[in-house]
Length: 197
Image (cartoon, rainbow, N blue to C red):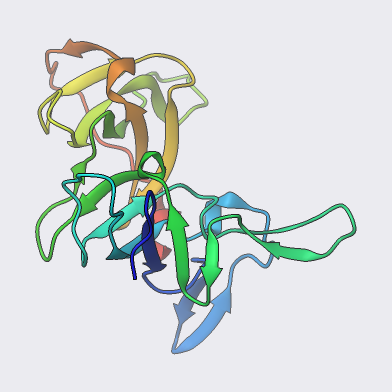
């Protein structure tokens, strides 16, 4: 089965990433369906669209928008599936809802227009924030910048993802505004809670 304009995907794991293993027991860390932070964003492509030429293939693992697998309540309080829902474990997604992919055991690659940047620890003694603002190290790229580049990006252009236990920001490639030289005091920042995802 193929759709004309949409990819058909299935979640890798469940719809939500809201449990951790504690001494062999499953512990739910969140029970709210509306909290986007616990929605699974990893999927496998099971069909590509007929009318679009794409670098993506059946079997690719992709990072998708947080609303794809999300459930929500309508104004009557009834729980509903997202508009992407097709049938059990099958969802339709447009190309602009996919941000990165990997094939088999290769590394993640950003789709055209998207990079993933790892934040840096704050170096300011009296700064209450644990990370430096609007600067980071490129981890996955669409080729517009290189992996390992130290870059700056515009305010409000970053969107948080947890990929393979790392907290990263998805940044539009066009929002990366500067490439810095390393000064030697840069340290990547990854909060401990990401390790349980």
